[in-house]
Image (tube, rainbow, N blue to C red; front, side, top):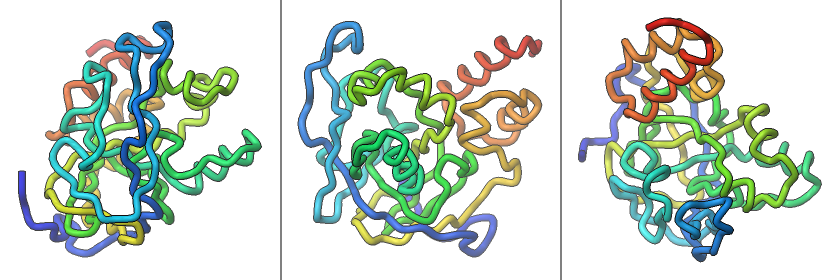
Length: 230
């Protein structure tokens, strides 16, 4: 839907960051059958020098191959923290340039994995909503070429955040990221991914009306794992 990218609920920006790079598909890659049901991936993202139009399903020039598990309006844009990328780079002892995590936006100055679900980010003339954590998959493991990468990524819980597009527009490197609304429930991307506090997840279900069916299923999986009855 198209709305005006103005501050909501909080009235003023609460924190700011910066878009270091905007990344779109560089090339589809063939993936071994054991790592992907569809045999191809669009994880290879690279920065582009121009402003990129952003629609309800993501950035112009970008797409996903496995549409069963990726993409859609609740996973339209993927953001990753530059600080988290640098930490991984030091641990893996290799450069991890913008786009390596399959992200569309490399963000400086915001703790992306600790963003509150339902928070609104104003970037350029777009308005985006924090919608979900990234869940690492076998294709990400294959792409990384790192031993036990999915397990390590999961344990670290620096997942980055998927974003839903509330206002279409364009984003470019250097744009400010303004957090213009943060829901009172305070439940973060990391909280949702970790799933250790069922009471907080139930609060998210009760207070955040925009969460996707995938997030609802994720919470139900946490409930079963935690041995908590609905």
